Length: 238
Image (tube, helix red, strand yellow):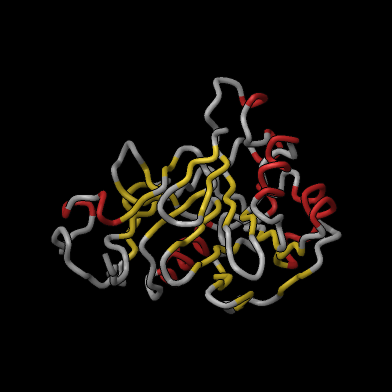
């Protein structure tokens, strides 16, 4: 199994095979990762992997899937068969609904939406018109295709080349993230990895020193024509 378990109750369904057809990720979502969250009161799936017997069995062992949060239209993959099999509630913004017309919970507007205790949907339009991130317990931010850790540049980043709706709005959405508290960035894209502040040096976050708690700068600068850089993460409790 290529579900990676950490010290938290989050499992990443990722691309660990040479061929995407042999991996848990789906070509329907361009190889994007998805995440399984074990929670009392009902487990959550963030975006969707392939509908595979071995995954279904493992999810059944862990108590099933009560909810599926879909960040945006690109990464719905096999959300529908998972929802049908487990009787899950799918959560998606109305502007992305054409990708999951049978979704059980459709939210509107661009204000944060509390979906359950400690789980908040955060509006981040830009990559697509109705893109939302999911914030878990003010600690884990599931960012879909909005934000990731750029391994080449060694910093948080996003892509103008793969922005399907509005780069200007995506930049503004970055500014709104600056007001949040979180420690981990968990993206869908395989280009980016799971990133925690403690894994980064002070040079990655100007003005910060390793191990200190620092406010995210309100500055969001356009470093390159196709990238946005956040100068620091927000008040990290490490």
